[in-house]
Image 1 (cartoon, each protein chain N blue to C red):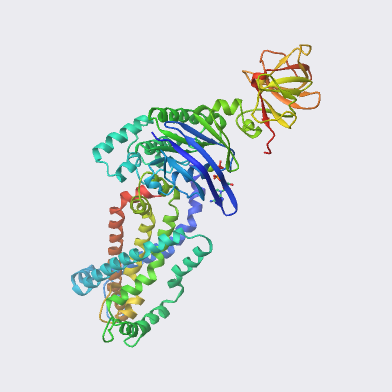
Image 2: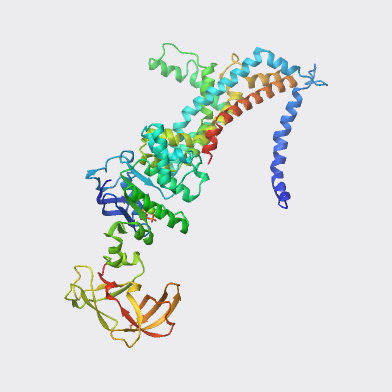
Length: 355
Length: 284
Ligand SMILES: Nc1ncnc2c1ncn2[C@@H]1O[C@H](COP(=O)(O)OP(=O)(O)OP(=O)(O)O)[C@@H](O)[C@H]1O
Ligand SMILES: [Mg+2]
């Protein structure tokens, strides 16, 4: 049960600035995801926390005490690697017992603790196998058990599911969450899969080119993204350049869009008249009768039946294209003229920040 | 089953080559060792077991055999000791420095055997650089005789066989993924503990190859012991050559050669069996 504070971490590889002031926090028992596209610095951040790499600047605190100068073996942080990194010459039992052997834990206690850890990841009966005789999912469980058995202060996971197939990924994802919650262990979890991050995390740090673009709960990140980059990375979103006209009485903005004026809330600090970005998630848009009041006329360009919904692409009078999800029971067809209704509760205004 | 014929055909050149250059000479050698001796010609007609009896009954020959095997073991052990740090270093180098260091490692093999041994002779001669430096440094009072001792033979063979130990070990070490060391560290192991528990065992495939190669080469070494060891110390290969060429006793020489090959093979087999579990666990 440890709180981790990461303050202004910087790291340079030659001329590339991989980390440019990463500030993060994980409270006791919290699972924090680092989410972002390839090359944004997730692995670098995690390796600095683990101690495999020295940051050029910044500090890492565990319960308020700096660990930046400690070598990895003195940090007590469990690490789960993307390719598992199991010791190929040791059996499942010996792999899991490794950290206990290093700590000179008595053999009898090792056996009970290894059994506990393997039970926790639901892997039993394979203790005497070598890693090469295990499936990817089984190897991942061993890696998790090996990291947990030392009762680390912090668990670090770098894309632990990347090498698993889709079904297994789902299963192991829940296993990780379950284990993390039951052991009440603080964790950082690196992924570039937004659905994974949403499902698992207490908080998500969306990273952008070596910085944290937004650090908040999944709900906040999804519904109230700080910038268009975050909105795009956390799910499907229509991002429309707009100019808010003035403030609403409720602290939101009046935004002219498609011939109507929408009252939407948004990021603090946007000034009326400035260029801004309006986010409309597909679920914020619905199709109505073209004659309905405040309906925005639109032309249906395409529709794809997805089972639970009908994914549509429409274009507005000014040529702006929008994606939305319509009822699968409707009769929307390409070429039809329809009306668009905007649920402003799912709309959000963001500052115009370069990508 | 339809695929069997093409596969057999594919294997044919290798089988033919092995038969011609490996199996046939051995068969011929073994057959020769059972032939009767004769005067005035290499061998007579008829077959006999007497050569084996003579070879195994005479301490002159068994002594040379044991000396060769023990010296081979000593050379192998020293070679391993010298080579492991070199291999560790070589495996961690990248780019240009890797090439440079690699060239240094294999350099003993780039010099012909006669030139190399002549070099040793010059180096350790009574008035050679070794004695002069050692005296200048105050290590010895008067020149010592190094040439024609067992020590210089061992030293020279360790020197020349080091590449055969370093290269396979370095390859094995290169195959140890760096994340394994990181995983070990994150589990609480310091550098030495990580070396002992991860790096060292995983280098075993290389150690096994190196040890086998160097042992076999050491036991069979002929030129270096002959040049640097002088006449006083008899090693098995020299004895075999003396019988085959000097005394023209082909059957007896063949019997000695077969005994030497079989003993070497036996030692290698025992080593392989004794390390079987480790080898099985660490095979790539
Ligand atoms: N050893 C290195 N030498 C030079 N540049 C590096 C090195 N490792 C990473 N980088 C660079 O640093 C930046 C951040 O890399 P990092 O591995 O942290 O990204 P990531 O977010 O983990 O990406 P991915 O999702 O692809 O794993 C990238 O631009 C990368 O090219
Ligand atoms: Mg990465």
